Image 1 (spheres, rainbow, N blue to C red):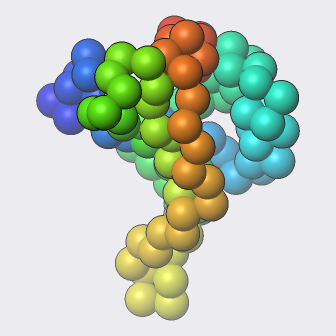
Image 2 (cartoon, helix red, strand yellow):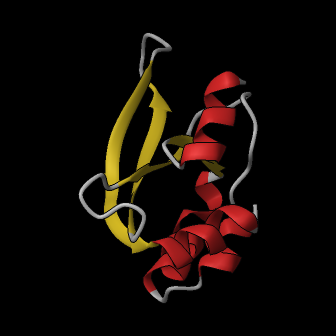
Length: 105
């Protein structure tokens, strides 16, 4: 919970998850800069089932507060029931788009 509070305040860390069934729709919304609707697809909370799409944000120190790095990671359980991750997107977005994304969750 502390990490999520930190992420909400600073914009750094995992801000939530998106169900894998909604991955394509979520990515399509990000591609067309519809951050409000994309944010509505993000599920907040600590409990996660896998597979899922993890959503992380990080303020870019050199440009703060004008840009934020968004990272998406696809997760799944391997044959040993351990979580594996694959980065599927790194994208820099504006502070305005970041606020649209997180405020609509």
